[in-house]
Image (cartoon, rainbow, N blue to C red; front, side, top):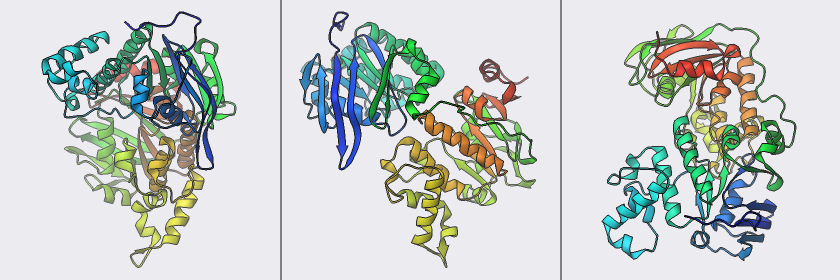
Length: 501
């Protein structure tokens, strides 16, 4: 069992005037933070607030430009991640650094200098099983971790941290790929670790998670410390106002006042997961798609957009049958899909903002088949300004942008096509509340121009806030539709868990 300091003693991890400069730009400024053993501390802020840079300094990934990191009130000068881990600080990034071809035990002890477990596979399995048992977990030990579920992989990463005798765990968006049930399973484990004396720094854009889990919260804005409070002394509006530097106001813009004509008809559509789905999308309106993981929400959008072929049924755009058209032909007809995985499916990460926006719009920026750099630059600059993309210039590689700004680039490239129907698959996942509000405003500007928007989201409150109507899928079947203005979290969940009648 990890021993925690007595109540009232110094924090296990703290910082004093911690700063980081990249050239003339100060990314983190004079940051003060204190983590107590046996406590879950939430670190909050918009994308670009400096959270990731702070985490990297705490873990030893990068060195601060000024200031000091303390462990048990002793100054530290980490030169590497190994130095941080030797001091008991282990960070779990959002993209878990597991070796997919190795089993759980091998991943847990990879890099741990313990000759007994390194030399004996049975010892690896035995010790790894014991570490997982501390988390209340029993996992398959003879299969590659690539065959484990997302939450099981997270448990392997946590067990690896315990194998390194972690006193401080830093978790960056750990629930991004988890279902609600898996998230609650993770929370149970994190609470047990807290009770065992571990200090946990928890980074998440999902404020409902923060208020369910954390003991204390710190808000950063523009690289600086804004405030630190017990979670019981604050609320969502207080946090959002501190994050964005202004009153919370209304996150969701007003709904459409009028119901437009039908633009898109889905008629008895079936695929690998969905079966006999019929629905309509109207001009100037937002149709939300709700459902549990595996319900077929993403497949529905992919079939409509031409990314997958249906097994049966039809897709009609303005009364014209566009069923089974390719992604490119569907886009040419006026249907654009913003995919769920923006990094792997929506962007060329090594290329610039300018190039990414230009790729699906070469016809409009070309002359006699040759792309004009001036048009490419002007188009990207116009869209970057319109969507408030934060970047040094449109020539900056998108891999250097925050998640929220990367999502804006994906939106920009498809908005340049002036779609009749815009399909959005989890458009605000992993994005801060300020950027979410900007995307919601953009959606309503598009509907005001007559665009029909269909949005898939795992967050039911988001669908209730942004949609005009919500359609619910359960195991591929449409279980019902509801006016968003009359819907509640409970009423939508009820439809998520039952079959159609």
